[in-house]
Amino acid sequence: MIRTKMTELLGIEYPILLGAMAWITTAGLVAAVSNAGGAGVLGSGGRDDTWVREQIQKTKTLTNRPFGINVSLATTPMRDKIVDAIIEEGIDFVTLGAGDPRPFIGRFKDAGIKVVCIIPNTKLAKRVEAAGADMIVIEGMESGGRIGNLTTMALMTNVIPEVQLPVAAAGGIVDGRGLAAALVMGADGIQMGSRFLLASECESHRSNAEAIIQATDTDSCTIGWSRGKGLRGLKNRFAERYLEMETSGVPTEELGKYVQGCSRRVADLGQGEEETNGIVQVGEGLVPLKKIQPAAEIIREVMREAEAILKNAPALVQE
Ligand SMILES: Cc1cc2nc3c(=O)[nH]c(=O)nc-3n(C[C@H](O)[C@H](O)[C@H](O)COP(=O)(O)O)c2cc1C
Image (tube, rainbow, N blue to C red):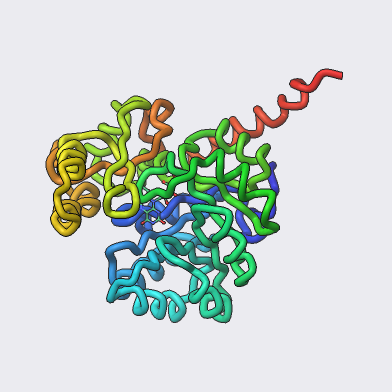
């Protein structure tokens, strides 16, 4: 058994968070992860407050274990309504990213909702700790989806010694070796997105899972740096076209139109369509992603591997 500040705080059995994935982490997958002893997280990116209410209610019918919801703090017409809906419905915790979480921490905490902030650097980590956050996820640029500039290793090296809060590491962690390494680095657990894209309960189209299984470590790329932030996913015709547009200096508004709605299209559409309609967002930990299996099996496997590694670790030290 592995007990950490993170399992204590969230009231979960294993130190594994499901990384929220817009259009992908819905009630079924979230409840499957929570029922298996991790913590599921709904992805509210691109959704509205009605969807948020329905999904929180639905997840509550599928699990009585703790689960959370992710809110993208980028200013959208929906953001404030989503925050109100979460507070009215009630949930165990929120994960806050894509912006400065500090103005939102007090409202959630006053409503009895724990606040987990997704953090790309030490400065923001210290600031959210001072502002009352309960936990942070440090998310390295190996992650699938929107990314910052620092690697997971650099974040663990820099951030962990500077904060007292529980820390989960994310980005390129897909197995028990990754969990063991994060714990040895001083983290209290991990957040995984990509590995759960291969969960049987994941509703993203199967053609995306197949593309991920076929991919090797050099098949991921990042697009969008010219618009301020990178987005990591599989190199395909869509990504290559985007990169060509980026390097040839196409105006940012046009690039914005090209990517608009692409994550929804990729999550929803059928065989082969991801080639032309969007980028399959996934992290750099690709080689071990070989099969589709139930979320509970993923969690059991990751825990078994991590425990075996940690039990054997003392043998590395010779007197
Ligand atoms: C398809 C996809 C969609 C994602 N969408 C979101 C999102 O809506 N909000 C968020 O905070 N993180 C999002 N992420 C990041 C994940 O929550 C998680 O931190 C990341 O996947 C961890 O790295 P890994 O992919 O190497 O496991 C997304 C990741 C992927 C792969």
